[in-house]
Image (cartoon, rainbow, N blue to C red; front, side, top):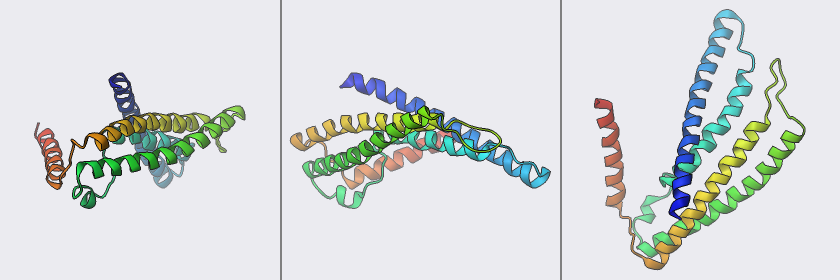
Length: 189
């Protein structure tokens, strides 16, 4: 299982970084499009289509990394007030629900990606941008998330049976404070 973690975590970080560069590119492209349209009367052709395709990388690039760090939203109010086995059960339930949702998404995204590639689907406009790479990125990002969710499900099932890890409200608060301090320290350097 540790071998899987050593593969998934750097891959998720790499995809996250690509999504970050995609966000920067989308920002600059959108800015250039607005400036071109407002000041020169000439928009950047294909800006909308490229931004739409880049959004897939931005969103699905970040999902797996957020899952690795367990930074997805949950209601800490109830979670921190129950024992370790109940916390484990809550985590298992959320893992299973996420697996169902993203499993269905992967299933449909895979069919859509293959179909899009088969018909060489592309955008309409002056610049034709193929849509199938974004569809494959959606399927690939979802697959990576599913693998991480399966990994987390195994860990959470162990937590249910062992009952040894308990997260308190103080633990959550201390984690948030330490992360905030880390960002403040990074800003001083």
